[in-house]
Amino acid sequence: MPAKHFLAATIVAVLASACTDRTGKSTDEAAAAPTQAANLSLPAQQLDSPWFSQGQENVEAAREQVINNTPGAAKNIILFVGDGMGISTVTAARILAGQQKGMSGEEYQLSFEEMPFAGLIKTYNTNQQTPDSAGTATAMMAGVKTRAGVLNVAEDVPRGDCVASQQRPLVTALELAEALGKSTGVVSTARITHATPAATYAKVPERGWESDDGLSNEAREKGCVDIAAQMVALEAGDGIDVAMGGGRRHFLPATETDLEGKPGRRQDGRNLVQEWQQRYSDGGTNAVYIEDQSGFDSIDVAATDKLLGLFASSHMRYEVDRGNDVAGEPSLSQMTGKALQLLDKDADGYFLMVESGRIDHGHHAGSAYNALTDAVEFAEAIRVAMEATSADDTLIIVTADHSHVLTISGYPTRGNPILGKVVVNNSRGEPESVPATAEDGLPFTTLSYANGRGFADLAGETDADVRYGLPVDAGRKDLTAVDTTAPGFHQEAMVPLGGETHAGEDVGIWARGPGAHLLTGTKEQSYIFHVMARAGGLLPQ
Ligand SMILES: [Zn+2]
Image (cartoon, rainbow, N blue to C red; front, side, top):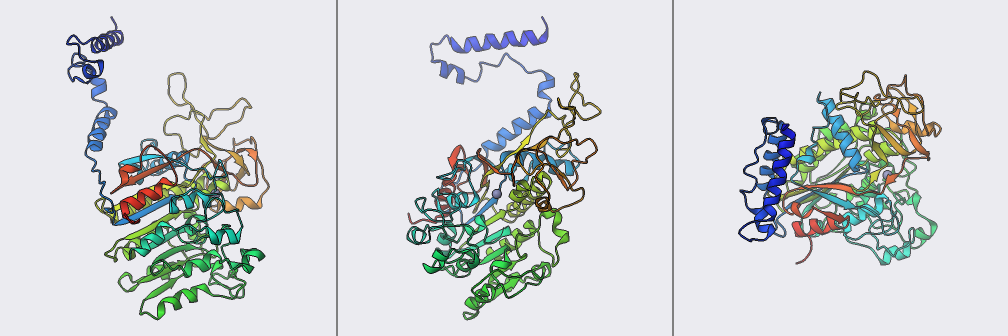
């Protein structure tokens, strides 16, 4: 009898004996008895496999995980939001990061994938199956889902309705932390007034109200306040302690230009940077404003009580495009490390939200290259936080607000460049020497988008947004002579749209520290707030 058949026969025999235990115990009890499989030994090729020993080691490590259920045990909370970092983005970024390190890639683990707990999050808005970032950020920050496009107002507030928003605002986790005397921080590579960072502090019925020029006439008349103005005047505690990101234009009057020659947007003539500094100048607080790399490098952590860093007029650069910045700007991992140094000075602990805002923007522009390289940098920022903090007193949560329509497909061989054309295996399971062709006779890439602007070959261009200056070009193209791994390659898209869209499937959540074990299973996005509130003692008990 061939070995394979012998094994199968033995398994059947063992299973049969488990079901008809002669002592008359129930099937469950019999199945739990440790001796039932003892006469089935595993072959050397199985026992000696690194997959086997790694699996055993990982089970033991999982059994050792400490569960800390004590309310308030999380002195510090760090919420990392990868904007648009759906599951396919995580998988592709993992492979890219591994391949950048000379590995095959699939086996690599991003920093946060080493965290002990993970689950799935349902991201829909109350009025939208596939969500936007304002409604999703509100769910995370205020603990209730709401409509697309609104920030920290109840779900019955119509989008853009100033009066209704004034009557139905929500309190955020950052405000609760401030009220407890903790330090608070917001870091993003997007504008600091953009949906996700704004959701930590602002209450508006329209995410587009980043400065007063965006307000409707009705909103102006009824006294609604724009997002940037709300940020510098935040009343909870003593306001945000550390804020770094882009969005300078929303803090400066339209009559002024910034150090990179870009004009402000404010119509009310206010300079909110000066107002922010004046707010703290009276009390002997050292409130420091910085706007470029040299300012960032010269931060004196011990002497800085408050920090406002606005490094770009609009969004900050994509990570791979950062070298092209006029005044120079820090990376997300640098900003995260500096924010933690500043916040950690508070013995009462801190709340920090860090957003990688431009994973989302790379995808919208149809550039997997920019989306994935920003996701890899996001993982580095999380690594900085994991190394700078202790799982004993710091809850770190990593998630996304929503997914994107990126797919990984086509049976590429193991280790095939994730940004490359699909090379399949032959009938013996070994890689072919040339890329496969589809039924239309053309090669195809592993990564593609279900919709968006579609193909472009911009070669060495590292700014995905250049794509918006070229026509929409969906459908199949001849990629035979195109280097699809180059920074400027934009993947094919099926449905032509002005921009690639978000996707509606669940996103992942990963966690470490007190309360992290609560972030398992499939949960609503609003649940995240309640884990932070419970583990961090943010709500009155
Ligand atoms: Zn988006």
